Length: 188
Length: 191
Image 1 (tube, chains in turn purple, green):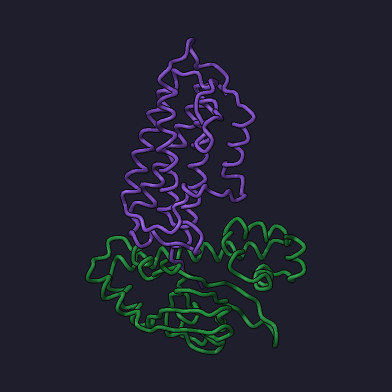
Image 2 (spheres, rainbow over the protein chains, first blue to last red; image 1 turned 90 degrees about the vertical axis):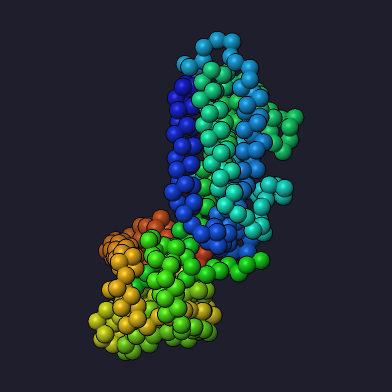
């Protein structure tokens, strides 16, 4: 995929996620947003808080990586993947139904959260959309983004962006499943 | 840690847009009957007339239809957050053909049919909510009807997986098999 298409697709996905959170979750009461379906599963707010923790790190990392513009025009350059990038994206992709264990410090389980989580999520998404726009001038194949839990490893800029977006998709879908289970339905 | 499914009544009220607070309070107060069933207890026995609408707080129930002496078919399941009643009897006032039985220890809140219908008639917001609930339930019923018309058990299973993935975590296999009109052996072979 060329850089321009690649970024347009990510941009559309992030915009969708943002709308989903605004329309489906923001109107709910805090009691529902904090409700857990099982003692060890996340509430809607916990799903989003987990994403916020990731955004805090990766949005900064992206901003740093984007500070250096590409040497040549990149709009038609193919986006390529490293072995690590392909693996990480496949692991986080929502179509991979296996559970992945969150790192302890990125696991918000057991918290009582407030609506500031939603506001923070929205801010992060606005930031990410701006970063995606900025990335149109950048070389996405440059290894530039240190991995959060092991900073000696670096992802290419493009694959790191995709990794963060599929990770967000994964957990917004998880939150939507929680939302669906909270819905009162008539059984007859 | 707060209990799972803290307050389905709250979930229900949050789904009624534009409900004035005073109406919401009066409506919530009318769910005054608290029921607790043990595993195997009946909420409704075939032949009873349905007088109330129940909201499941926690637990699991099945709706079933006795097809022959000693035989029955599951036609639906209620879990936390389900609004539950023997619907045909609730609407017509005739004795119910269906039975509703708890499959686990179950807690429910109930409102009298007459109270509930009075609220629905009086409050536009609740009327709208009830209509949406009925529409959704009808769509679900039609989906199940199509399931039952499909000759291939695997297809029926795939459709249910698509439609209600959560049900597989909640309901014992033998009742799911009955719901999908197959034997438990067939279901276990397909999975």
